[in-house]
Structure formats: C-alpha cells, structure tokens
Amino acid sequence: MQTWFESKVKYVKVSQSGNEQMVTENFLLDAVSYTDAETRIIKQMQQSVKGGEFAIVDIKKSKIAEVFPFENGEWWYKATINLVTVDEEAGKEKKMRAFYLVMADDIQEALNRLDESLSFLVIPYVVSAITVSTIVDVFPYNPSESLIPEGFKTTGIIHTDKDPEDDEEFKKETE
Image 1 (tube, rainbow, N blue to C red):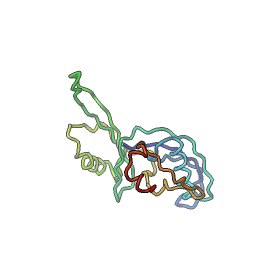
Image 2 (cartoon, rainbow, N blue to C red):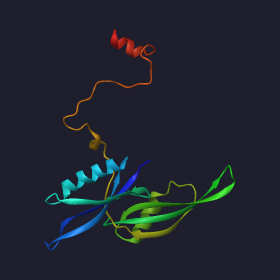
Image 3 (cartoon, rainbow, N blue to C red):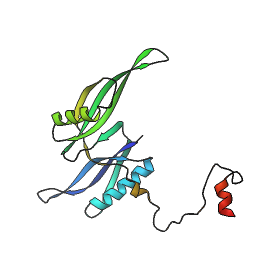
Image 4 (cartoon, one colour):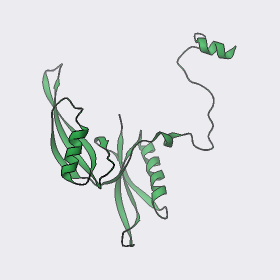
C-alpha cells in the first residue's frame, strides 16, 4: 500500500509572461516516511527550480488512497467517494470515505476516469464530491531513486533468519 505525503514548497517561479514571482505550490509524493518525503521533494525541486532556491513550508501525510494518472489532462481532481461495508462479526454496516486523485481536463472527464479506474470495486460507491485539487504535480515511487548512494559500499553480509548449520546452500558455498 502506498503512503502519500503532501508537501508545500515556496519558490520563485517564472510566469509565462517572463515575470518572476514567489509562489507556494503543493506536491504529492509516495514515500515511506516524512524523512523520505523530504529527501524526495528536495531532489525533485533541485532539478526543476531555476536558481535552486526554495523552502519546504510543510509536509504532511495525505488522505489520498490512490492516484490515477493519465497521459493527458491539465488538472488533478480530488474525488471523495462513500462506501458502505458490512462488518461480518458485529453484523453492522460501516460507512467509509475514501479520497482519490484523478488527472483530467474537466470535471466530467475526471468523473468518467474515476468510474473507469474504480471498476474493480465490487461494492457500490457514491461519488460525493469532486473538485480541482491544489496539487500541482505527483511524484510516485520510482525504484531507481532508492539505489545505493555514491560513496557507500555494501557490507557483503547477508542477513537471514536461517541457521547456517541447517542451510544446505550455505554449506556448499563455504566448502
């Protein structure tokens, strides 16, 4: 399961007219911790901000359950859906709310794409809200970002729960 973090970053942005202005924008990152989220947003902003000066104003866990990116779409829409599940043990209905992010050009397209993306759900749901999100860009997890940093060396030690005496492969390798 992904854990999404919202990060607010303040930096100088060059507008389409060529003017520079200070802006604060929201970004969404898939990360394992606050530290990981901060590291990842710093890397992303170093690559994209002209002059490299920016400030991370806020990082918080997001309630977004899943992100549905599409090839084309100008805006990120935040959709709220309501579900009703039945608790088998208690025999009671449980109301749940989930949030999704969908890329689209308009609300109708966002609603269609949301329905398409949630077609795997077997329980009925109701879309209770869909709005243009303040999130400017989404940075999903990329395995290449978690490579061993330059200058670090692996120890060569393999950690295992097996007892070396009981492991046939280990015996073969050490003989």
